[in-house]
Image (tube, rainbow, N blue to C red; front, side, top):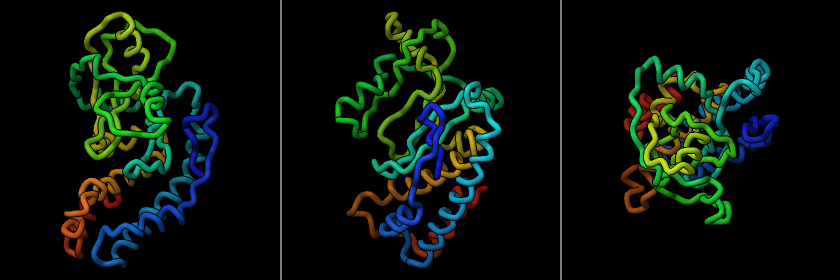
Length: 244
């Protein structure tokens, strides 16, 4: 059972991995069924191992003082699981790599509550950046916020640190904020930016699966995007499961 990082006490919840991977296997990603089964089985085994390992890791972390943020793992618009980002480690990686922030107009931000209320709690695509209303205020608007900004198909971008700064700036008539827009490549290249092993592996699995979603979701091009044996080996070389 994975850990529910959204709950205050990080309680576990149940995922039927056999059913999930059987469902994913109904989509044709590779021309040879045996290749596809091998690929999905490799991920399934790895995720189950990291799921068990995460309980030991979480027990060693003081979650009341370790700042972390939950991110939805989706395949298309279907929810699979939660993963958690280790905010302190993300900030260390940004400092080590000397990344430069960007300037974002505050008109791009939308409260998550308003976003969910627009479509009865269903996820829909939006160009806006979601943030949480925290009811806590901070005038440290000069400190860049952190935004999860994937390049693959995902319904929205999300503030993962600095929600209170966004809220303060909006309510006080601000126009711009500095931000680090972090793509999936940042997280895959900095695996310690995840709170635990399960968060890391389920996120990397998301990256692999969304490769297929982005390249195969157009039915007119579906057959042209199904990978044969040679294409599979090239894909596997670049796959996240082969990089760790």
